[in-house]
Image (cartoon, rainbow, N blue to C red; front, side, top):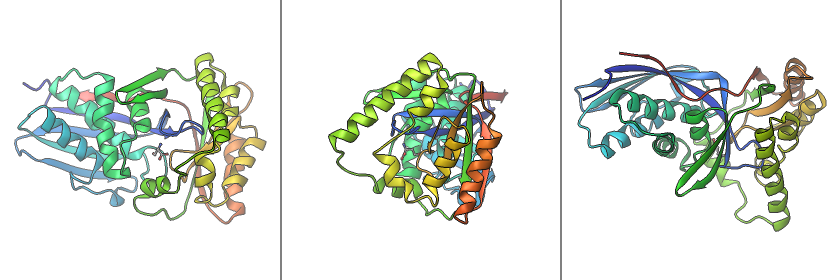
Length: 317
Ligand code: HSE
């Protein structure tokens, strides 16, 4: 017996990797977010409508849409003979490295859990949401979905079995985001994963392990400067930098303007920079990032945000 017939859910954007934590670190953002309405129907089908930011680029076919894949999988696993209607109001722009597909996937996993009173825990919600990532990215990486489910900062200690560690982000952590207005290829994340090295020299492993460990400590201690200076990756970032025009110029400009660190957000092409709000505002960093992109003839949308909470219920009946 369903607990509700209709729920409205808010699900956040997220940034993955944070430099050295490829497929391991994720952080939910306060803005932007998706608003997703989920209803039970008599149709025995999963039906999807997508509105909002760049919604014309998102498939409504439930087998190709990340939210549809999650709903289909949950109905199948729980043996439920029900229909589901999903209306997605996109706030998180797709294809820019801000966890857009993860936001929709987490919204549906969380929303169906609420509707049906399934009492799933974070681990289950992450497992179902990660299935949706296959539809959009071709792989079951769980960094964005874990951040969207749990909020704040997450570390995926293990994928099999899934074990996610969740830490609060420091209140003085500001996040500047620059989204370059460049043409991205379809299946962008799959392509950005295909350029990664298959083997990594030990020297680079040592660098990344050191930086990843220090970043985790930065979150545990609430030390924004340590988080920022740990944001340096010598494995994935160099491979992807060439896909983002002006990457090094923008990163250097952000740091010169007072950011503690900057890196590619997820699979890009967005760049994120972190700011210690105790001694800096985000304005100069955002401006520097915009100017950096302009130097290479690229217009960019810039905004500032903060770490944010995970997926949550707005309304239920
Ligand atoms: N960790 C993933 C990647 C995130 O960098 O490919 C993609 O959103």
